[in-house]
Amino acid sequence: MEELKDIRAKIDAIDESLAKLYKERLEIVERVAAAKAATNSPVFDPARERAILSKVADFVGPEYENGAMRLFSTLFGISRARQRKILQGENALVTKIRQACKETSGVFPTRGVVACPGVEGGYAQQACSLLFTVPTIMYFRSFDKVFDAVEKGLCPYGILPIENSAAGSVASVYDLMDKHSFHIVKALRLKVDHVLLGVRGAKLEDIKEIASHPHALAQCSQFLKKNPQVREIPSTNTAVAAKDLAQSADSARAVIASRRCAELYGLEILAENITDAAFNYTRFILISKTPQIYPGARKFSVMMSLAHQPGTLSDVIARFASIGVNLTKLESRPIPGMDFEFRFTFDFEAIPGDESVLRLIGELADDPAIEHFTFLGAYEEV
Image (cartoon, rainbow, N blue to C red; front, side, top):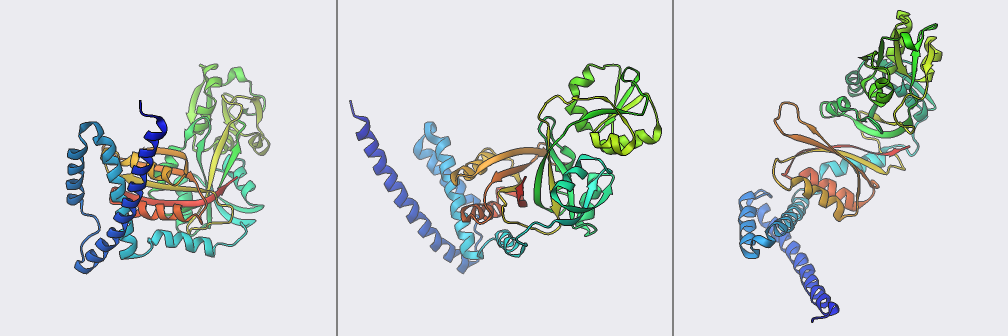
């Protein structure tokens, strides 16, 4: 029987040959780029790529076809990226990221005018007060209005909830991301401690309706199940629900909100420890109109729409893995008006100065298989 070390020696020899051929292929690709520049030919030639894949499939046979397709598709992507770099220079997005790193002040500001959803006492306001020492807060009734305020320059910053550890992502914020022009400049994980609030003199057994933001209601589902006689009323914001209750003075209604709202609006705590999970956190993002990348940034967020073809998502994931990047979140959202078409949001850990990461971002932004690519920001999360 052939020994393992002898088998591995053969594999090592093959790998060495593959590495040499890979280098040789990329050197020839540079000559291809020069020839295309002379004839003004496009970098992407889908007909030729299909023809090569067909030949490869015939050569390796059905047993090895899938793996060979992935291998050669990756090679095509690397080759196209190299040609574009030669023909077009550095990708404009990568240049923009470099410029943002260079121009952003070395210290995150202690003051800022911030567009905030809801009213005083909401969790967004609490998150804002943790990010800035002295914030000037302008309140808006909806997430869309917060995006508008930042995009139109009314406020330099805006703060929005993006996901909760118990209830998941805030879908409406993700749906608005592609509609508005913005950049994430910082993020914060805030511990959320919901309580049930009622007007003074109200009793839990008399409550007929409980109002709050849908996410807060979802985070307290077990408490609500124990009180099936109560009707759930969705609200735009936990603090807005508390303020409205205080103005109505309705003893048959209650709200799920923060302890801070009890103090602000003269409400009583009817029940405590009502969240499903003891460790309940909401992640907030701070956004700006222009890209700002401060020292300490360790997280990237990007959004992309992929061609509706087999293997496109796995190819993107493999490209992150190939440079040792850890994906911390991958989420898909349906594209409005498009049947079975999805937009993907990726969060990953990386340093803005990492050349391999910048090179990958440039490749993804230029890849014809990625129909829409958006850089959301590079930032620190606290």
